[in-house]
Amino acid sequence: MAIKREFKRNYALYLMLLPAIILVLTYSYGPMAGLVIAFEKFTPARGIFGSKWVGWQNFNYVIGLPETIHILWNTVFIALMKIIAGLIFPIFISILLNEIRTKWFKNSIQTIIYMPYFLSWIIVGGILYDMLGRDGIVNATLSYFNLPNVFFFGNDTLFPYLLVTTDLWKTFGYSTIIYLAAIVGINPTLYEAAIVDGASRWRQIFHVTLPGMAPIIVLLATLSIGSVLNAGFEQVLVLTNNNSNTLVLNSGEIIDTFVYRLGIANAQYGLATAVGLFKSFVSFILVSLSYFLAYKAINYRIF
Image 1: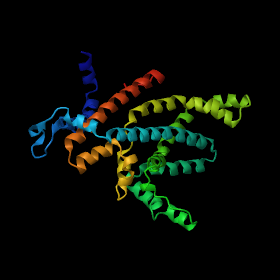
Image 2 (image 1 turned 180 degrees about the horizontal axis):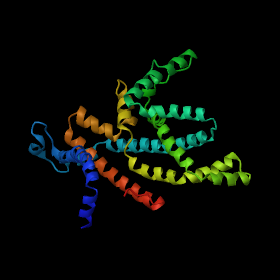
Image 3 (image 1 turned 90 degrees about the vertical axis):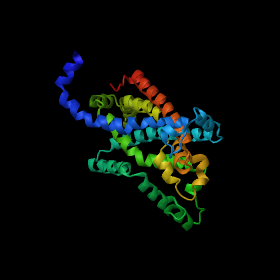
Image 4 (image 1 turned 180 degrees about the vertical axis):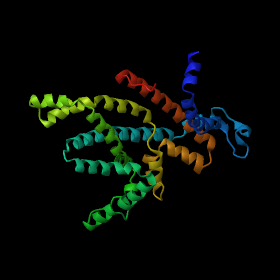
């Protein structure tokens, strides 16, 4: 058989892959057995097999909560803003960086904007509190000029945009590298032809650079569909983990923090698992749709 011959020929490679497969099965697929908690009134003392089976009751209860629709809206709204900003801004910055001719200056800028990507949200949260807190640098500067202070972490209207802005600051450097790689892959003869035709730098950008970046832009935009329900659990948890978190709960609560609040803070494990399972199911559909669209648009495939 072909499969048997393939295994004999590459058995060493399959053996090297075996530890990774075991880890994935143990830590990614093994815990999925706990999804049964979503259909139980789970009690830790009784365990999964001893807890009372309630069927769809947890789902019906969560759907009936008045804040559920609002939390879903918050999640989609914040995630979509992050996706849009995370597509437009890195494209703009990568084009500007590509126009820099001084190599050391270009490399320095790339390093500076890429560094925040390696910082955890705990560290970033501390930096933001020092800068934007009530006694932070920004409010101290405003006070110096006799201007009113801004309560960034307690302003219900401002908080979603604070999430988007800080997430963009932290992550856009990584996306910029991807777009710069796409620009490097553009055939230099296209620029030479544009120069011969008398095209200015702006026309070269609009008629050569952007069309050359189009495939990777379409790919990343399409694949981002699967992240519509991922509004950033760590970020939201860190930036609301203070005495002002109730002030921004109306606009800052997302599905992941809702699950955390139900399951960890309130010990309602069945309800939390039901919400998490619902989110995972919808995310699976969106991820599948994004890969299907990516395949149809630019013939991108995983396998």
